[in-house]
Length: 610
Ligand code: GDP
Image 1 (cartoon, rainbow, N blue to C red):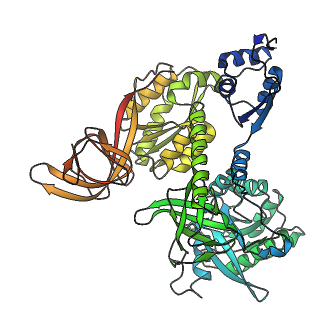
Image 2 (tube, rainbow, N blue to C red):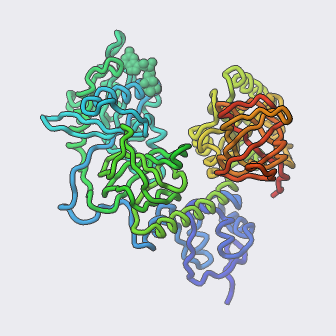
């Protein structure tokens, strides 16, 4: 049989075989599957008139076209498809109510508050929380679990509404990007003394793209300079025509500060939901929902706030949430009370997962613990593969050279310990003289730790993050790893400038790179006349190793760099390393340590050149 020639390159014959490739696959991934050298595919495609690099992700059409030329039937599988197939292999599915019409019951609307910064989103969420509870529940909402429920009287009937307690469209979009439709209605807050601003428009776009009905809260009407009518006029330009002008969007003038018209706003939410949506779910099935927040709690272990979407979640259920699994050991509501079961639209904190799931991950109850674990394991494996593939693609300072050839622009996000240094660094970086064809752009800057939002933005715009005397917080490091975002830490300005400058000039060839080992938190300090201060630590993640390099982090800021772990003990024994979840006693080459400080250990490893 003659091997097919594609664009003059001899390639294997697919013979009608079906080839499954993940969405966003590169020619490298393709080549792996059919066991050829990636450069052959690059060449073939080049000859067909398309120029791509081996590791760049290509469109499904290109994958299909190339496959066809060789006689393969290429199926491009999206991550959602993959997950659906995974669940199907266990005879499960996510997202559908079981049974028929008769099994559906009304459920509360789930609301997200969005709008421009400083227009009063947080204040509004606070004032709804304090106005509408406390009536029935003595003590009011005590816990910020990421969502809460309130009741509003509409036409003489008490109606429940669920509010997602993290304002802003980042959270909304992040969840939507992961296929989790968590929100039924969006309240868009516009300050009456300011008007429609860029993030207002963004919020409108996000809500409209998700086909989520909008209620407009015209806020700060207590201010003298408020012009609520002007807002109505402006919003009309974005397709939101007030009811009083013959449109179908409800506008409510409120003051979040004075608690004015909050009832009317809640009523508008209920009425809009009733008019535009059919909010029903089957409460009598294994629960399914979405995690809106998750973290590791010191005493309770992994804690996830879950919004139930259908079915009823009960203590004792076996669950899988993203790549975490476990059994519901306890459920706690926004009042800090234990609850035994949670029906649709109910947010609850779930305790009992074996690891921390991601915000936006779906949660479902399965029959057996074993099934939950198997699904979680498979997702985990897939995540690792995707990460390996992805980290090849995003830019880091090392592969800047090839990146600049494509775009001639390096995007940076600068985070620092105070605004002075951030400004100084930005100014100095902008002052680097580079040839005209290359551009340096600082797309975001700020004071404080590197956050998940920073990483999100960096991933979306191929930016490198610079952390000056600050570290990543929460799950930002993990997320950067997953997204292949390069975070660079510096504590000396000229070092940062040097590196960026050499990267821009294509000279950067680092031989060593820092490999993070793990983090330990100081829980106790013992003073010893012989060895100085001994830190009683709990290893939070990874490992702590004797003689490893370390830095001391206090409140997200690096207070001491370049320390060494000089001794390490478990109980009474000297040990070389201690793993995650274990306690240890250690000393470092720096004495001013405090309880709650974080000791981050790392080593320098030779970076393999690719
Ligand atoms: P966010 O960035 O949208 O979450 O806005 P915030 O809720 O933090 O509010 C920004 C500022 O506006 C704060 O100083 C609030 O106290 C103030 N603010 C919020 N709502 C009102 C209001 O109804 N009237 C007045 N006068 N000020 C308000």
